[in-house]
Image 1 (cartoon, rainbow, N blue to C red):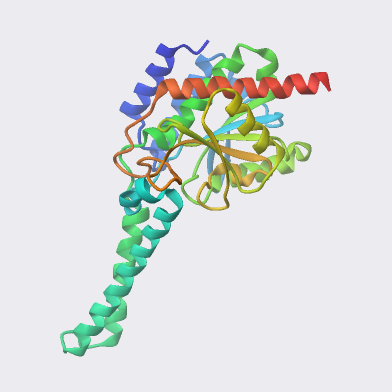
Image 2 (image 1 turned 45 degrees about the vertical axis):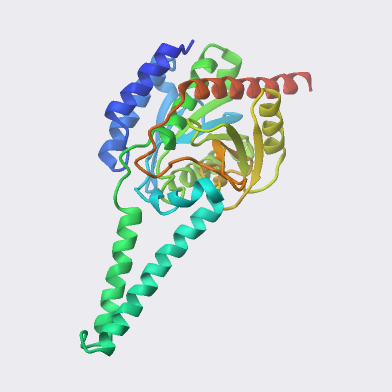
Length: 324
């Protein structure tokens, strides 16, 4: 069984050697490490594969036509969370993200205004030069938001990877559970969900009968006290999973969102994202410190508890099918 010392050792190795997975070399080294960890849990080499496409590399453990997928993304983000960070503890994730976007637009607008003023007093000789300077400012803003990697990523999404490993460890001790599940670590979630998009398309093509299988996506599960269960659209897996977590003692809040709670689950018809969040002063939830260098919290006890609960949910599904 995946004991506390083992998960602590795995987490510490990731924190020390693999905390950023931003470029291909970092990602490939991490995939090799994760493959070794799955093998250490008892998964044979022929049960572990890389799904490779132009949109990234996904690590797949177990049968691709499994009844249930337990997933996370392994890539790490750019250093852009600071834009919303001043607001999240007051307003929550959604409004703070909007305010951050407005700030970027205001900066771009003020750059144009400043250029116009300088042109008016004769400092800048050409309107074309104003446009060039303004678009340079826009390019710098984009670079700051998307091109510089975040140095600390313990919650987003090292915690999700550790959660998948915890569930896989428990499943490895239960042949029925192991047969029912596959575990997937997605690439390029931070780039418009590319990795999961490619995998979902591949799965629909190779095993179309399983295209509606439940997908439990663990994203940012290492810091928080409210369990957000989110889906782009309403479906029975979303309802049942939220109910199960409440029965298991978690403070749970269902979220139905096409944008703010967006992750790899969105590429699957019955996908659900599970995240721990905190409540802002005005009530809405937020994910603490993600996409910032303050992302240094990863509560292993919380992850282990959630991993056990996910396994119990899968067992419920299995028992219901057997009784049915």
